[in-house]
Image (cartoon, rainbow, N blue to C red; front, side):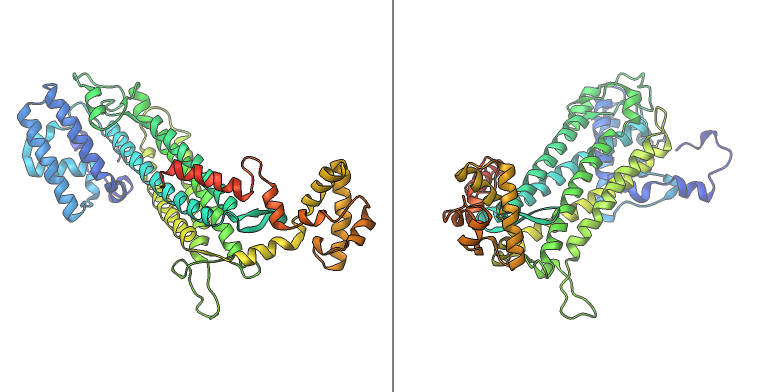
Length: 457
Ligand code: ARG
């Protein structure tokens, strides 16, 4: 395709290092769509004849049908998906095929194809996240009043509800989805027609190709258009943050499924056994989601480092943009599906969670709050008094509400019988009814809002 000025062909090493067809064949649908939009525009503008445009269009459909049926052939001499398609087109329709590349370069072609691919990946990722949110909201609705210990520093802090805990992840994914929507809107400008780097002298209609491919408008600067991979980075950045959130959720499941916690029984379908220890049921899916997050984040790093030293406009380094994006997208899709199954199909051991909430003096803040509210004691002093009560309970190996009235009065005589109602875990969560708080009534409000946002009846 470019051999005119060369005396010899490329060496075997050159052919191998140059070939992107092993991975960019994944762009074949986008490549065909962009070529069809381009040739329709060339025909409409009279840059190629109507006959040639029709022949090329039919030929592209025939190539697409072959790819669909037999897969894309991998010939390193043809370098990439763009030349593979054009070469097959020439075999099928003859010399007219040579007119397709008028007013176009592989530089604007690859930018267009790749953008189309990333745009679809965003849509698929978003749909996956919506399904995971659905699973979270469904479980949250079931567990709006299931009490568990809430942690800070992974130390028992205050009782919370499981529904509240799960909805925290719903919120993270809500932000992730808005990042995807931003990225999609920002990237939706069509590079086609930027040609190699400087634009073209042919009377092309960039608005027509942009519209045909579902973009909002053509890109405004041809140098930028062929050298820009921000759209891929935006996706990888959003993907990294999603992977990070999935990894945190996976980590919670790993902890909760461990025997000392015993908060959750994961579905057999997402667990594995041990070849030596018969009792084992391992949370491998969750561990792999946690592991995959490292690879997704690595993809974002890889592409940033590929791009950071490149002068305008296109450099061949940019061919390395695709493997990290393809890898991140497939790891992410698997991770989202695994976490959706895990959330939907796990059995939460609510008795065990409630027991754990009663250990660890999770209602100590409630005692302090009670002293402030009922005895008008300044919070700092109430904190100190409560600390003394926890110390005593710890010495006795008892829970706070197992201390006798005498013992409590010995610590501070302003404490009276009414305090016991404040010390139960139920009273503790019910009291936290501020907007966004853990009280079951608040959690149900959050569930309702989420259901509406997701369109769940
Ligand atoms: N295979 C190339 C890529 O993926 C296509 C663009 C090649 N352009 C060029 N001038 N060599 O980036």
